[in-house]
Image (cartoon, rainbow, N blue to C red):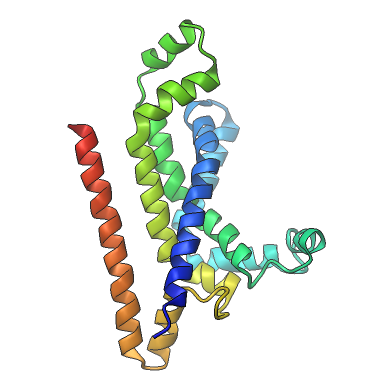
Length: 219
């Protein structure tokens, strides 16, 4: 049995989670602490992928990434190949699809930090960046871990967005969820069982690790 799609799924989930953390820390900071209307709009936009059907999101991303879309021609001109039906396209689509899984825990983490702790740091002459790195982030490590695990698990199980943007190209965009769908269609229940069991096990291990670490940190 070929486990290439399973490892491709792990690779996609790890890259997506790491990039979302980099994107999420400043974005969630702005959403959590800004009182502007634009921050509210950003929070709504970052939540949309959570409530939109994956096929709807996948369809509009396909239009966006296509040769006739706003982003597709720019990507092809700069890098020399189209964005749809590529691993890079899957990564960008996964960043959008799993954005709420990172943003929501981080925003909650920022808002849980006592204001007097932040004010004390600023009063002692620390800059906002120093306060963020030395005071805020170390005190919300549980939220960061939750964001990473949820982003990883959410990306690992995506189907509609992956199918619309990446298709089913072996070695490039054929991830585990696509294999399960294809196996069921061809009545290959053994392959479907194996891949489903692997994803179920990995999701269980990820979540139980999250709860164990958070329990230890809370003691």
